[in-house]
Structure formats: structure tokens, C-alpha cells
Length: 164
Image (cartoon, rainbow, N blue to C red; front, side):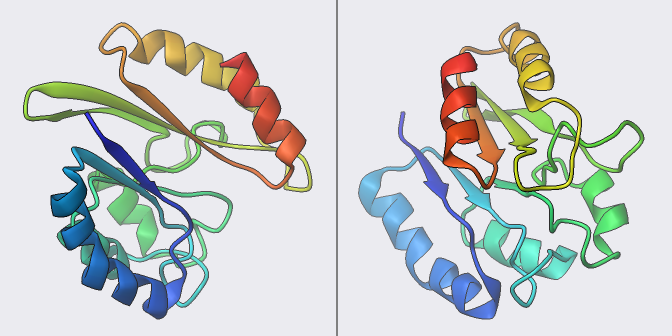
């Protein structure tokens, strides 16, 4: 099973490249599941329902986000309804959307977890504790777990990769 993660897609030029090249890459490389970091899809900062739909239509199965997810307020209702769009799981309770989901594609379950770091960023809940709890929960449904950790500091990224 091949999984493809596409890093930060930036604005219209990034969406255009995804629409142009991603379908061919998925076919040529026999990609089973595609995840994209999409918090900058709309004009280089934020995400909207239209920009998300563009890359879903190009073959992306799940969009993860980070600290710019709320730039365009219209996403508030969309993120609650669209299970393929994730926001960091360590945002405070009561925030719209979800921070993880177990997807089923061709009878295969894939858990995707979205977390955000705290170094050089506005403080959120502890991504290590939250991440550990979610991995334990998702692990009940599938052993196929992917974590997108949106962070600034390489040290924090490395630490969570060893921890989880």
C-alpha cells in the first residue's frame, strides 16, 4: 500500500500544480491514499470550501491543516461537515471540526491524525499527550496510522516522531 503526503500547497499556483500533476502521479505510482497539507490553499493563507473541493477533485483523500486554518471564516461550517478536512487535534475543546479520522478506502482502514506543535507558535494543548491518546484510540480500529505534525521547530518534530 502506497501513501502519498503532499506538503504545504500554496494558493492558486499550488492548486493548479495539484490539479495538473496529481492524477497522473497517483496512477503512475499506484498511490492508494493521498494526504495533503492544505492550510494555505486560499490565496496563500487559510482554506475555503471551494479550494478544498478543488484538490479533493484532483485525487486528495484527506486534507490536514495548522494554525492558518481559520483565516477564512466560511470554513467554520464546512470543517464540521467534511470528514476529509482535519484541523489540529490539540486545538481547545469545542472548536469546529475534528483532529483525526479513520478513513475506509477499498475496505482498508487508514487513521490520519493532525497535530500542531507549540514551539514558536501560539500555545495549544500538549500535542504529545493528545497524540498519544489518539494513537491509542485509532489503534483499536487500524494499525495503519499517519500523523501530520504541523510545527515550526525541527527539534519538536523529531521529538514527537520518537514519542509516538
